[in-house]
Length: 263
Length: 280
Ligand SMILES: Nc1ncnc2c1ncn2[C@@H]1O[C@H](COP(=O)(O)OP(=O)(O)O)[C@@H](O)[C@H]1O
Ligand SMILES: [Mg+2]
Image (cartoon, rainbow over all chains, first blue to last red; front, side):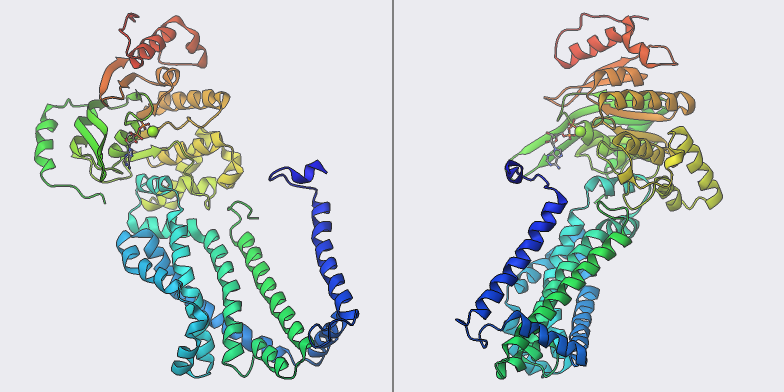
C-alpha cells in the first residue's frame, strides 16, 4: 500500500493495467446505471447498448466509411501542407537568429488567435469547399508547429554542433547532417501532437461548414435528437485519434531505433 | 560567427617570425572577455603558451579559470577578444578538421553507429571508401571496440563512448588533438583505463595533444609538459616539463618522482610557495 505513494516509483505492470482497465469499466458501469435507472431520459443519455447498436449498424451497413474517408482526407491534406511549410520554417527559426526574428514573433502572435474564430472568415474566402476545411486545419497546426520545431532545434546540444565543426563540417553540413537527424525523433513526436490538434480543428470545421464527414454526422444526429448517434460519432473520432497517435508512436520507434526508447 | 578582423593578421606576422621551427601552436597575449549589459566577465586575462610538435601538454587550473574557453579558441569555435592563436604559421579563425576535439560531454552522433561516427570526418574529407574503411578498422582496433562497430552510442558505456570520440577525432589525422576534460565524467576505474589507453596511443603515434583537466594526477601521468593556470586573474602561472619515463604504466603513479610532481603542481594551484623541487 505504501508502495503506491512512493514518488515517481513504478508500480507492478499488472497492477497498472488492472487499474487502467478498472477505470474504464467503472465509467461504463456508471453510465449503464444512470441510463438504466430511468431518472435520465434516453434523449439526454443514451444507454451503452443503444450506442453499441448504432455503431454496429453504421459499420455493418458501411454507411460510415465515406464520412471517415472524407474526414481522414481533410486531416491528411491540412496536416501535410502545414508540415511541408512548417518544418523548414521551424528549422530556420531555431538555427538562425535573424530567421527567428522574422518568423517567430509573428507566429507566436497568430498562435494565440483562436482558430475557430477564423471559421467565418474562411467560409467567406473558401465557401464550404474542401479547401475551407483543409485551410482551417492548416491554420490551426502551422502556427503551433513552427515554434515547437524551432525549440527542438534549440535543444540540440551545442557540443554536438561543435564536434561536427571540429570534424571539418561546414555550416550546410551541420544543418543537413547534424541538426536535421538530431531533431528527427522529437519532431516526429511534435507531429504526433499536431495531428491531435488537427482532429479537433477538423471537427470544428465540419460542425459549421460541411455537408459530409464525421463532424457533420454528429451535427445531423443532433437535429433529430439522436444522442446515441452523437455518442457513437464522438467515440469513433476518439478512437481514430487514438489510432493515429499510436501509429506515430510506432513509426517513431521503428524509424529511429537509435533514439532513447527506440527499437 | 567565425569571421575575424583583418588587422589581427599584421599583429600575427610579428609573432610568426619569433617562433621556433617545430612549434605547432603559438598563443600570444590571448584575452577573452564576455560583455553583458551589467558587466564584463574576463574569462582569459592574458595567456601565452607554445605547444611543440608531438608534445602532450596538459593545462590544469581551478574550475572557471578559462580552460575551456582557451581550448574553444584554439579549436576556432570561439573568438578571442585580444591577442593571437597560431597553428602552423596560420592564424586560427575558423574551426577545421586540422584541430580534432574531444569534449567532456558525450558528443557522438546518436543516430550513427560506432563505425559511422568514426567515418563522419572522413566522409567530409571525401577520403575514398576503401581507404576510409581501413582507417576506421585501424582505430576500432586501437580503442578495442571492433566488436561494437555496429552499435549505437546509447548501447555503450560512458567510457566506451569517449573512446569512440577519441577514435573519431584521430581518424581525421588532425595536426593537434584538443581534449577538454574528456574523462571528467567517468568513474575512477574507467578513468585510469582511459588514461593508460591515451598514453599508449600517444607513445605509438605521437599526436600533438592539448589536454585540459583539473585532475593533477591525470595531467602528470599523461603529459610531457604541464601548464598551470590560475583563476583570478586568468593567466598562466607555471610551465612544468614532466621528466618521467617514456613508457608509462599506471604503477608509475606510486613512484616518488610522480608524487613529487603532483605535490608541486598542487602547491602551485593552491598558491603556496613552491618548496618541493624536482630534479631529474
Ligand atoms: N558564453 C559565456 N558568457 C559569459 N561568460 C562565460 C561564457 N562562457 C564562459 N564564461 C565565463 O568564463 C569563465 C571561464 O569559463 P570556462 O572557460 O568554461 O572555465 P573552465 O573550463 O576553466 O572551468 C567563467 O567564469 C565562465 O563563467
Ligand atoms: Mg571547462
